[in-house]
Amino acid sequence: MLNEREREAIAGLWAEKLAQDARGLPRDERHRNLEPDSAEFICALAAGCHARALLEIGGSSGLSTIALAAAARQTGGRLVSIEVERSRQEKARRRLRALGLSDRVEFVLADAATVLDRYEGLEFVLLDCEKEDYVRFAGMLRLAPGAVVVADNILSHELWDYVRHVRRLAGVESVTLPIGKGLEVSRFPGGSAGSIG
Ligand SMILES: C[S@@+](CC[C@H](N)C(=O)[O-])C[C@H]1O[C@@H](n2cnc3c(N)ncnc32)[C@H](O)[C@@H]1O
Image 1 (spheres, rainbow, N blue to C red):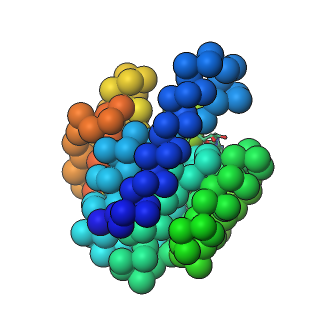
Image 2: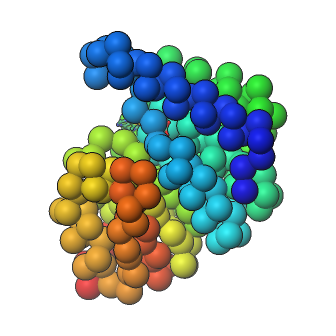
């Protein structure tokens, strides 16, 4: 569960995002954060799964990073937060430091495609990057048996190719939840996420 300071920090980030949207800033200057309800949910889910090895692709300014680092605080785990854009990640670093969550997070400034193979035994993963990369990145994850992968924007972006893909993987149980912009929550049986059964 998020504590009050974490919840306030998430509300603040969300208010900033809404203000940017209202000003009509160009897409690359706006933050595209996870919705607060989704943050609340992934924190509870990751903590409830006792996930200790967590990873997110697309940390941006840190809204989902707060949620997953809060889960890691509860499980005694660590989060790898991958983000390709430096200034967004700097903001996330500052926020996590202010919340006393820095020691729970390894910030990685990189295109996920170039670093994903460094991480194995992943127990909880959030996909929240460019939507056309979901299938490719899901196939690159080195998951622990029973790992949970959550993908955002399923309903807002109609990501049915990803949904179909993940549901065809051998042994995967998967459901779309109408939380925030739509979350696909998938439980993997173990091994690589790339083999289609
Ligand atoms: C929707 S935003 C993520 C929002 C974030 N999860 C949050 O809740 O605040 C998508 C982010 O993914 C990043 N991104 C896109 N492609 C990426 C890649 N290949 N590797 C790492 N980050 C990537 C973008 O720079 C952007 O900041």
